[in-house]
View (cartoon, rainbow, N blue to C red):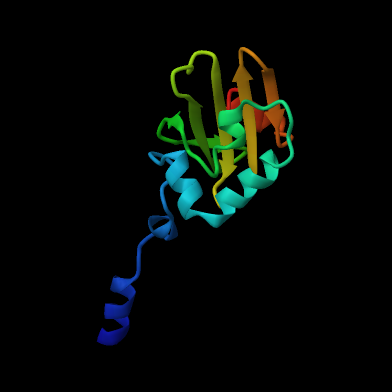
Length: 133
């Protein structure tokens, strides 16, 4: 009985405690350390013409300014929202990337003064609202 109580007390109280936080992360580090995030973003950007060069290169050469991620609720699920911009041109060229908690799904909104506005990844209406797309 005492052994069972010791085992029970050593287990986490909530499963969420072991899950990594979706807030306070930076896109270059997440892309470098998480294969699902990297692969989802690479797949979404691959072969897309007309994107700003810093965005086409963002997986291989992270030369952009990234803000800390936010955890945002979307239809009862937490998602991870990243913001980034081109160094020296933040007001003119920026993006918001909304990832599923597991990193396997991503939608991206690009706002660029030279190349216009682009939405990639077919976000749902709730994802558009959460990502401010």
